[in-house]
Image (cartoon, rainbow, N blue to C red; front, side, top):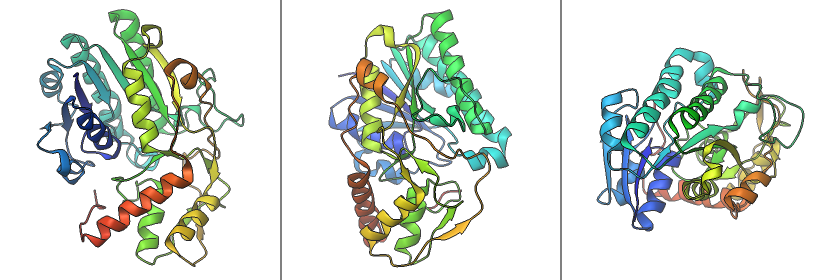
Length: 323
């Protein structure tokens, strides 16, 4: 049994990680300021985890959380391109200053390894597909710059302080527990929520935009593999976490409409500022060095996600709103 600290544990990916680690009988601690995370995400395991309600920008609280910890799974972030475009200062504080605090606290506590939730947005709008880790980053948005800056901070800590850390560049993670009705929610969560309400979702752009949509269980697998990967992988190296397949927003809309028996055609709006046009992961490095095998495919993941939202709707629980 190991002790894990999950930053952002009440969030979508953080809570999914917590559920898996509890299932494996590990000792799980979390830190979350609940600005976007929700206590309901932890309801079923609340007696098996310890949550510190604090902001990762509070270094003293992060230091307390890191005491005696073996692995830090750093998921906490203001994870939204549009939010960062609208308010870059606030997202900078959470994403960069908060990450620096996590690194300082982990270093001083002698944590074995840090696994960081990086972002595929670092690649920017490069035409080459799929995206491979050797590509020179071309971030378009403040959020992408922030996540990339954190990668560089992590690499410097590995070099200067002999820390072990791995950066996982997530490609459009989706699944149960993802907030749905905020303007900053993931597109899959937004589409499901609107279709369930009988409203027509709006596709930003012409619908040809494509993404490597990745079910959350694949991201969980990658995090746990990264904790125990060989030391030569943990010098701040970057690994893509996707499926190696992409789908357009038009494809996504139709797949969800079929699952939910929703008959309306999509509405189309203006493209979002800072969005990339196409995003597809090469997962060759993660396959070879982490033994990563994304066994949850796009369509099965959509079905499981819709089933979860429908169950919560039937239970009359409001699991969707956050500021």
